[in-house]
Image 1 (cartoon, rainbow, N blue to C red):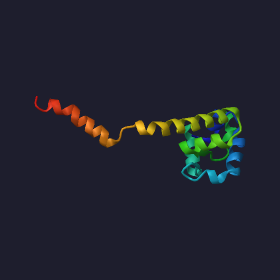
Image 2: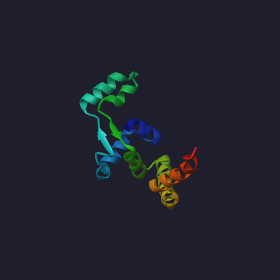
Image 3: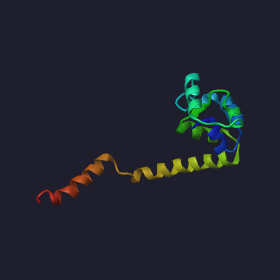
Image 4: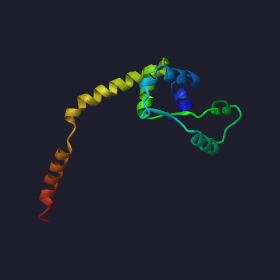
Length: 123
């Protein structure tokens, strides 16, 4: 996702989001976030129709965030929605960890398939 879209989602300004990222840059390795190159930026800009009011945010190549970067942002931003999202992410991690013993392995699934197919082999 692009910085401006995330800023809207987290109910903050793009410049505030970028400042928070720069203050916490070690939390954003290149597989969490990267800035579009000048060529990518020009191509992206040519693909969208913008009004003059919207062009203010298009003076520099935007930052793009991966899923992990989006989650990391929720931990460093101070908006109410960012805090709520961060709490939801933490709760989801705990729920997944608790569910792991209940999740079947690939071997379990293959064994089940074989048992289901067995009665039909003679037909």
